Length: 51
Image 1 (cartoon, rainbow, N blue to C red):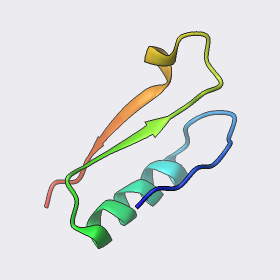
Image 2 (image 1 turned 135 degrees about the horizontal axis):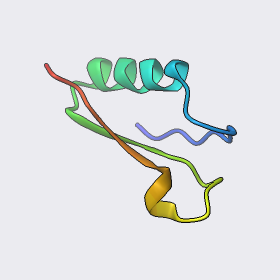
Image 3 (image 1 turned 60 degrees about the vertical axis):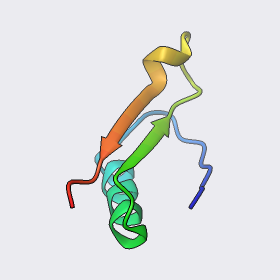
Image 4 (image 1 turned 180 degrees about the vertical axis):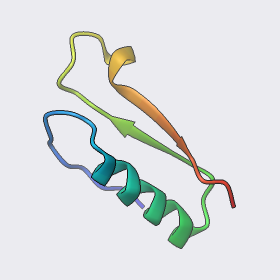
């Protein structure tokens, strides 16, 4: 599942949303990407679904 949204910053709502997607699709790993940062490495959040 892929979804693209434009938001100012990461929030708990986005984290909960990706965890829900991971659980429903039975996937273990997801990435939240924030393109509104100076360095892309600062805008990557790895999310792990502990099944």
